[in-house]
Image 1 (cartoon, rainbow, N blue to C red):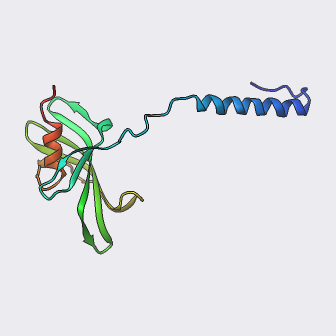
Image 2: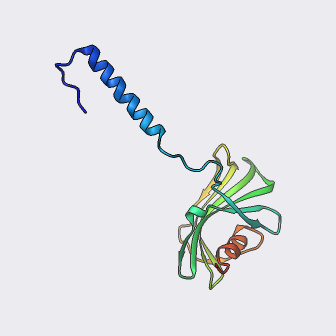
Length: 149
């Protein structure tokens, strides 16, 4: 709401301050997302003991295929020339009938909390491949393709 230029400057300043205060208090009344609601839900562990998580907000079902963002944290970090790899994330689609996985992107972290990326991989010709219990794909396929109630 514009303030007419014919209004005295002291009143204009007060009106602007009141509008700003109204905007701030209106924003403060907006409910925030539930605190403590985890983004990642643990869904199992690999045969080597690495925890595997899924972001429930990313799960999309389409017939016998399920897409999701999956994360794995390494109980024993892997040493590389750049440092220790501690976690990875993958954007993948799981074919529940064929028991196969298509990984669209993988991000490998040196320090996930700080966002320090070791490597980001995007296949040039993505295609479905086998799943393995030794990595996230087997755990995620088992969880995402389980019969739902």
